[in-house]
Length: 577
Image 1 (cartoon, rainbow, N blue to C red):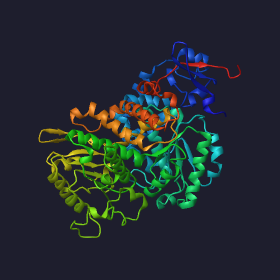
Image 2 (cartoon, rainbow, N blue to C red):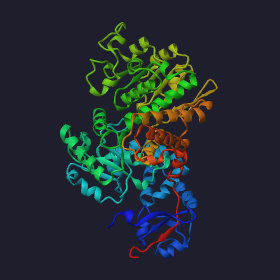
Image 3 (cartoon, helix red, strand yellow):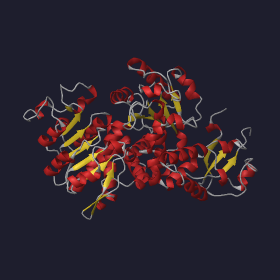
Image 4 (tube, one colour):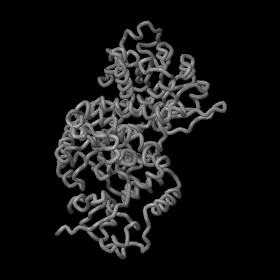
């Protein structure tokens, strides 16, 4: 069977109106999610395309289809059932899935992505009904070129790739991590304008070290322990080389790799293929954006802040690196910036010459920074860093529920009129402190953002806004800009620009109401704004290869290429002429 992209194509008529040409007829059009319009096929299309008799006689437009779908969605008894309803719809009709998602974005983002996606990952083998994307395993990696050659899309521009080793605070999930990639790409399309027919979710199933999966006969992934060291990188090397041959313009977003591997993979491939790690750079950028917004709310500068980051995994180190980069961007030397950022792991403060993990070296504190502190052990604890450094900002990416206890928050409030406290760990059960508790312990003065969605808090008749530092505010716009610019790399400048753009959008649209992150409903607008800014930076620093964009109105260019779910007219073209 030829690739699906040989069967249909988008065209523009002489009046500038889009339509779709198809070279197949009959029931196959109803079986392919890319071409199935269901009851929205017009009478003309039904006759011309050989669909008479295969559909109910009534023609119903997209809006009525969406009404019916939303009614059925609302009848689902719980979040995971709603997730499965949407996944089934996506496998029936891609355009209808995104149209429904566009109309009910705020309600459905938590269903297609966090927090419900964590349940879908854990139950992946039991819930599995339809294939999607690409899965490569030790027994198939030698045939990766053939596998990609058989993929239905010729011109893929975005891959979200995981090895499932560190999923959303729930750890090694083996084959289940593919659900994360599917969810991310849904946000790329509905929030970031990326055509769904130009993207592929990929699971590098190198095994699992989770024993309950290895001993579960229903587990669909590879039943062996994870590949390590040279064998692991030989596997990933083969994959990257095959992608470069099959889809030379593709961007890779690395997703949910274990902390040591995440940094090694990013360093190994970011100069070979345009790629970025969302857990490191996306998390860093969204946290930096929130911090910039909080500083504006206080009337202060980023370079004035003293920051504590509790947690030194991929997210924690990524956030610390982003804040250091932001301070350097505002004029500090790198050493000056590092001295203002204190990162802690499970052993205490990350310190140069003492902490052994190589990936933490760029954010390690200098020994003389704490040489006069009274501490109980070799390394300062979180409580000791808070009491001695007197930070203005406390950020949590530890995954430790309740880490920011009453004494910690009250200390922060004692040192600052408006302490900035971001418990960003996902899922909700791993949050370092609930917003309600932080509000109470800080007497309503803290500026708060979380990683998972929380309602605003009422305190003494005042409504305290709770921002959500969701990576979805960064990666769709960043990735879409890289696709539009046909970027050959994702530069540090592009990532910092994404953070600054998000902060600028927030300052214009949200800060007047006290919010330091936009509402979820603004995601498409945010992504357009970020994409235009990042595309300009990519052209400026030479990351974009499509230099013909230089001098164009990039806001208009992004808007013109922003994919939206619409039923387009179908016209049959005979493949035999």
